[in-house]
Amino acid sequence: MARAYIIPKSAHVALTTSVMFRGPRVTITEQLGPDVWPGVKTTLENLGAVYVIGTSGFEFEAGQDAQALVTDALATGRVWRVSASHGYVATPADLAEHVVSMYGEIGGKADGPLEVLEPSAGTGPLVAAIVRADLSDQARCAEIATWMRVTAVEVDERRARQIPSSPAVKVVRDRFEAWAARTQASGKRFDRIIMNPPFSVPGDAQLWAKHLLLAWNLLAPGGRMVAIVPACITEPGYGPSRAARAAVELLHTHGGYELLSPDEFDHAGVSVITAAVWFDRPLVDAPVPRMVADLPEYVARPYTGDEVPVQVPRLFLTRGASVTMPVQAWRDAWRGGTVRVLRHRGSCIVCERLVWAFDDGENDPRGALGDHAPELLDPAERAGMPEALPVVACFMCMNDSGGETYDRAWSAARRYWGSVVAARQSGWSEPARDHAAERAGLFAELVMAGAAEKSHGAARERARTAPAPVYVSGWTQDALLDLDGQ
Ligand SMILES: C[S@@+](CC[C@H](N)C(=O)[O-])C[C@H]1O[C@@H](n2cnc3c(N)ncnc32)[C@H](O)[C@@H]1O
Image (tube, rainbow, N blue to C red; front, side, top):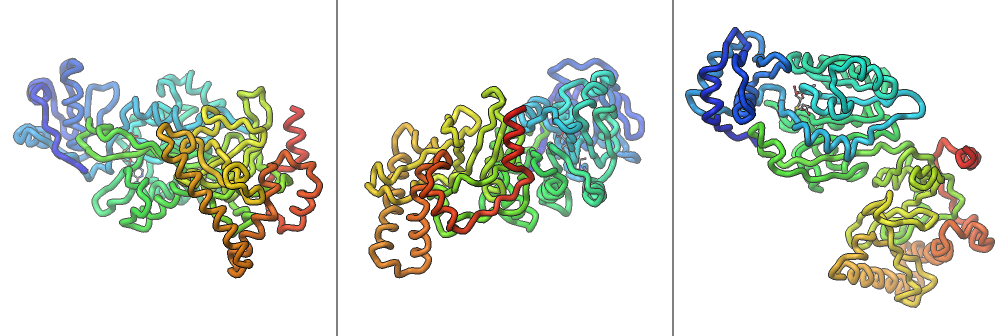
């Protein structure tokens, strides 16, 4: 939502006495103090001018009369953001640094340079945060180019001109839509995409969602996309347009988010609640069928222990990954490079958060799993039903200080186990329940035992007679052995 920016008194004075106008250009003729400069910059930017770094100057669009625009604004004492200026709102440097360092996963790649895309780069604050260097330092950029290459697309020539091209940063002056179509057709994909897209422009209130979806199509399998977008993307059911609905779904399936402070873009006179969102594209796109399709999501997902894990460079804990790569093998640098196998176990019975667990049982929430760390509710322990399947909850719900979610988890689990007993006692009359309960019985022993039970002959034998899950992977057990031996 845009609101009027009240021109501070000091900026009013500076824009009257310390400027020179020439066609679309404004030059600041005196050094302004840190208490005056932000007001001058915000006033001119909200009018639609672009700051030309290193020149004390601003540039309006060709053909515009800078003097007339500034004089009119000073006469009213306030300025409305120019919505026609391609939805420009710069990301403050500290926010850019936060989202990139927190979610960007920037680092070298074994097989060639990390390809990074900023699809609507403005004057480049996110690019600077990605590169973490002075963009005009050519020698430093040449060094960076040995392991990372950033492509910065920007439609506005005045802004694009302010991002120095170098071996590490390629600046493309184009509409993202047109460039994305050509790039997608060419087959090129990016390992990381980091963006703060235009939220809305006249005639398109949901441009941000379209840019997000276009960018997703350019993300390489295993890639990470990070975006600053309106916080409505986090609201299930939000959907004023097809693109917005698809963006909400994309976040639900492949991502996570952090709500940003409501005053994050106050500097630009914009009050909009935003979120930093991230998305992981699974390494494989084909879904892996669940072995027991009828079981609720909160029942511990059964495995035979024979599944071939997908080798991952980092953990993928999203809903999408739980469908396409529920078993992952990850080399944990913190544990001396040990290869650890991770399995999707289900969704927390209280909060529905996805829950994952390592086969080695080291599932501390302060480690790689964070909030996704598991707790298995054992039916033998509280319900006296050793033959039933365990129920999953997340560490957060099972360790709440008041014990409220802990109690809710156990009572919901007991209800589920009770329903399994009821189905059994009713003579398996309902086909769906029949199937679920039968499977529950069949796999209970396996699930309780987990993958460590690989040598458990009888259990394995029974598992063999069950429909085999198809694990899609470009990887084999031999590869795992090779990896271990490295
Ligand atoms: C919200 S600003 C953010 C700029 C930059 N990403 C940042 O974080 O500061 C959105 C930018 O997208 C640019 N833009 C708008 N429409 C575009 C399009 N169709 N293709 C590429 N860039 C576009 C605008 O010129 C503006 O610089």
